Amino acid sequence: MDFSLAAVLPQVFTGLVLGMIFVLLAIGLSLIFGLMTVVNFSHGALYMLGAYFTVFFLGYTRSFWVALLLAPLMVGTFGLLIERFLIRRLYGRSPDDPLLLTFGLSLVLIETAKLIWGKIGLTLDPPRELGGAVNLGFMAFPAYRLFVIAVTVVVLFALWAFLTRTNVGLIIRAGSRDALMVRALGIDLNRIWLLVFGIGCGLAGLAGALAGPMRGAYAEMGVTMVIESFVVVVVGGMGSLLGAVVAGIMMGQVVGITTYFAPKLAEIMVFVVMAVVLLVRPSGIFGE
Image (cartoon, rainbow, N blue to C red; front, side):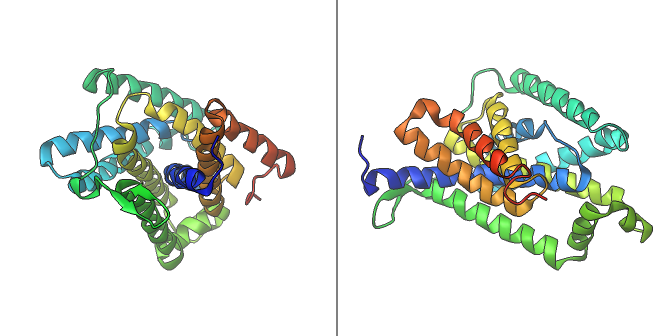
C-alpha cells in the first residue's frame, strides 16, 4: 500500500467531490426538515430523476449546459406538485405519515423510471470542454470533477445570500424557529413551505444532474445516496444547514480515504463515524 502524498491526494479530492454531492442532498433535506419537520424519503428518487432528466434534455437540446439548467428546474417543479397535492394534506398529523408517504413515493418513482428508461443504466458524458484533466501542480485531476466542486460552492453561496439577504429568506429562517409567531404576523406560511420544498427538491435534482456524468443514470442510484445523506444530516445536526455542509464534506473524505485503504469498509465507515459522533454529541455536530 502506497502511503505517499501523491497517492493519497487524489483520494482526498475524489472524497471532496463526493462530499459536494452529499452537501447538495443534505442541504435540501435540512431545509425541508428544518422548516416543515418533514422527513423526505423520496429525496433519493428525486436525485435519480435529476440524472435521468439531464439525459433526456441532453438528447433533445444537444447541450449539456441547457440540460444541467433544465433538469433541476424540472425536479424542483415536480417537488412543488408533491408538496401541494400530497405533503400538504398531512400537516398537523404524525411525523410518521409524511415519512411513509415519501417512502412509498420513492418506490413508485423508481419503478416508473424503470418503465420509462429501462432497467439498464444510461451513460452520460461530461461536456467536451470539461472532458480532460487539469494539472494542479502536484497532480492531474479530471476537469469535470473540479467543475462539480465549483458549482456546489457557487450554489451554497447563492443559498446563503438568499437566506440571509432577502425578506423571503428571513421569513424562512423565522418560520423554522417559531411558525406560530410568523403566522400571527399575517404571513402565509403555506406558500413559504411550498417554495422551500421546491428548492430542496431542486437541489436533489442538481446533485443528480452533476453526478450523472460520473456515475451514469440508473433507477436505484438514489437508494444508497439517500441513506448516506440522512447520515450526513444526522451527523451535522437535524435542520442545521452549516452542519449539513461540514458533515457532507467530512463524510465524503471518510468514504474517499477509506476506499483507498480498505475498499470493502468504505460504506460501513460512514455509519461508524455517525455512531461515534452521536455517542459524543447526540444532537449532532451543530444540532441544538
